[in-house]
Length: 67
Ligand SMILES: [Zn+2]
Image 1 (cartoon, rainbow, N blue to C red):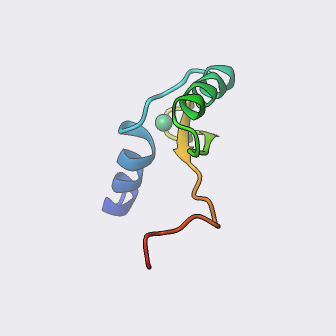
Image 2 (tube, rainbow, N blue to C red):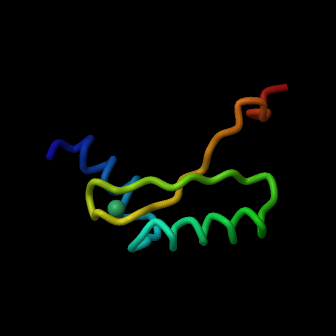
Protein backbone atom coordinates (compact mmCIF):
# COMPACT_ATOMS: atom_id res chain seq x y z
CA UNK A 1 0.00 0.00 0.00
CA UNK A 2 1.22 3.48 -0.80
CA UNK A 3 0.89 6.28 1.71
CA UNK A 4 -1.99 7.77 -0.27
CA UNK A 5 -3.81 4.46 -0.16
CA UNK A 6 -3.29 4.22 3.59
CA UNK A 7 -4.68 7.75 4.01
CA UNK A 8 -7.70 6.82 1.93
CA UNK A 9 -8.19 3.69 3.99
CA UNK A 10 -8.09 5.64 7.24
CA UNK A 11 -10.50 8.29 5.95
CA UNK A 12 -12.98 6.05 4.21
CA UNK A 13 -12.95 3.10 6.58
CA UNK A 14 -11.06 3.13 9.85
CA UNK A 15 -12.39 6.47 11.08
CA UNK A 16 -15.99 5.67 10.24
CA UNK A 17 -18.65 3.67 11.94
CA UNK A 18 -18.96 0.28 10.32
CA UNK A 19 -22.24 -1.44 9.61
CA UNK A 20 -22.34 -5.16 9.06
CA UNK A 21 -25.08 -5.04 6.49
CA UNK A 22 -26.91 -2.68 4.20
CA UNK A 23 -30.07 -2.61 6.25
CA UNK A 24 -28.31 -1.41 9.39
CA UNK A 25 -26.53 1.28 7.42
CA UNK A 26 -29.79 2.47 5.89
CA UNK A 27 -31.45 2.58 9.28
CA UNK A 28 -28.64 4.75 10.57
CA UNK A 29 -28.97 7.09 7.59
CA UNK A 30 -32.63 7.44 8.41
CA UNK A 31 -31.95 8.30 12.02
CA UNK A 32 -29.15 10.77 11.27
CA UNK A 33 -31.19 12.60 8.67
CA UNK A 34 -34.09 12.91 11.06
CA UNK A 35 -31.84 14.29 13.79
CA UNK A 36 -30.14 16.72 11.45
CA UNK A 37 -32.51 17.94 8.76
CA UNK A 38 -30.67 19.15 5.70
CA UNK A 39 -27.96 16.53 6.02
CA UNK A 40 -27.94 14.06 3.18
CA UNK A 41 -26.15 10.80 3.59
CA UNK A 42 -25.53 7.86 1.39
CA UNK A 43 -24.14 4.46 2.14
CA UNK A 44 -21.40 2.58 0.37
CA UNK A 45 -20.00 -0.90 0.53
CA UNK A 46 -16.44 -0.85 1.77
CA UNK A 47 -13.71 -2.67 -0.11
CA UNK A 48 -11.45 -2.65 2.92
CA UNK A 49 -13.59 -4.24 5.61
CA UNK A 50 -16.47 -5.55 3.50
CA UNK A 51 -18.89 -3.67 5.68
CA UNK A 52 -20.90 -0.52 4.99
CA UNK A 53 -20.18 3.09 5.85
CA UNK A 54 -22.04 6.37 5.62
CA UNK A 55 -20.83 9.43 3.82
CA UNK A 56 -22.22 12.92 3.50
CA UNK A 57 -23.59 13.93 0.14
CA UNK A 58 -22.70 17.46 -0.79
CA UNK A 59 -25.66 19.33 -2.17
CA UNK A 60 -24.83 21.10 -5.40
CA UNK A 61 -27.13 24.03 -4.73
CA UNK A 62 -25.78 24.46 -1.23
CA UNK A 63 -23.67 27.47 -0.44
CA UNK A 64 -20.03 26.64 0.16
CA UNK A 65 -19.53 29.72 2.26
CA UNK A 66 -18.25 32.11 -0.38
CA UNK A 67 -20.13 35.38 -0.31
ZN1 LIG B 1 -14.59 -0.22 5.87
